[in-house]
Image (tube, rainbow, N blue to C red; front, side, top):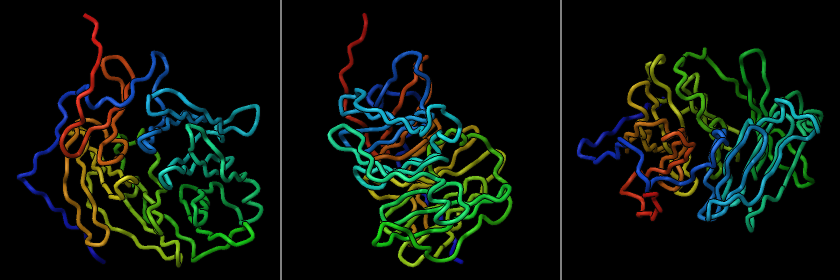
Length: 314
């Protein structure tokens, strides 16, 4: 089995963030709105904030343009909460709750539902699965037994149905990463790039690649961790099509590495003092309460953002 090689250029100028700069501010929420589950940069025109069971679409002026409630009943339950959210292409989202799974297109500052399946309907057709993740090429189904998870991929049929492809895969080995610093990170378990679906298991420190053409799985070994003080996060930058492994640490914040799947190498790119929650268009996403306000920042991996003009009270 191939192992990863860590490449560190000591002459590199790390983008160490000692304080949040105004130029990095992407969106500041109105007072008393709390912090959303996650932020998803779609393209230059739009971004999405995920609420507990609602998606919020914003335009290029950072103004709320549309909302999409995900509950399917009048009484909202935990089964309507967002379990998965990822960008499939430049205008399409995949989102899932325990009750439903959807492909959503964004056009003219509006959400348009392309596909929408109830979990109960799919489970009757495909088997005893409790979570379904839609992609353009097919469907990933999750089954749960105790604390273990298994996955089966289904390819699309011409009649609108789905057909099982390859064998199921089960999470192997005990969960050993106990550092809780990554619990609030965005939706990274299921991501897609080209013909590959990436399954990331943070607690077991494992990354598995599913080839959607033949149903085969390949495990990518990740660097070892101090499980009490470190955890990994895996991000795909859909705008640049680059892969990133982020090491979250108890004291240092986040160390950002670019990954090469083919060469099995990782190269350190940045040290960010905050918990990185995503990488979008070459920028690290961090969010939290800064100066008493909930704010979302995009910090460039290279260089700086353009200066922004702010009106300050004097």
